Length: 373
Image (spheres, rainbow, N blue to C red):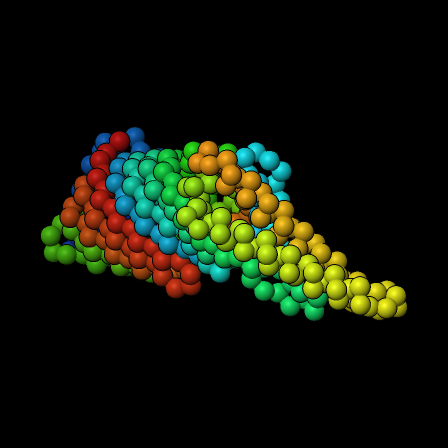
């Protein structure tokens, strides 16, 4: 008896719609007495969810225990890039954090995936993700160096857009809580996207709390749900790989930009040297002047090394490659989401969801089919 009460408490506390798809429904009200009595006397025919039969005997109407959905997902997000190291043709890599500034870095993804799921318990949905994705990263950046007064200026600008195809695999869970006529779902998953240009698959962790309410129609098992919530994405920051130079940077005018860059670096270096040599010994010993001199020389050396490496890569033609490593993260980890789902019957559901605010936008739509297991 004690165990039955515990099961009842857990089911009542957690029974709800998972990701606004399906939910465990407590049948109440005098007009539903016949349905409630039928649930109590009808044998539960499926193995899942665990405690499914006991929940049914308590008057809960369970969704079909298994399902599969086809999902389309689009997302655009601004990125923050740090610890950038770049090399060419498998040569030495240079850290460019001090001299490269990103005016814009945007990642875009389009993905189609299949998501099988089961209700492991009446309050816990478990699912897998298998899909194909097309992603791109577009950047606009520049090489910046200082003068003798530590005033930084851009000596070369460049833009790039790299496109990738990837295969995604993931696992997720959605614990749920039912509160009166509303519900709370805490969706979370981890996924890995394998892209040929990366040394290892890119990993992402998603957390999406949602609160909503379901409105029923007069036709049995037909309803519509609305919800609002949040979406948080955490990317594993380390990324390393290799790309063809002509697939990463437009090479039409790159040689001209490199040549102009050499001229500007030489001009800056001459100005720094003239300033330093014009100082007295006491002025050169001043910590402030020393710091300016060291910073300028270090940045100019880094810029010269980078331009020399690019110039050498251009001379080898279309076979040139770029090796890189960096740390990346979304500029905003959280954004706001709203969504709705129309349930035709216990088998078919159609859903749409949109995320916005901050520097990330996203859209998802899916069609789901459910069955007993």
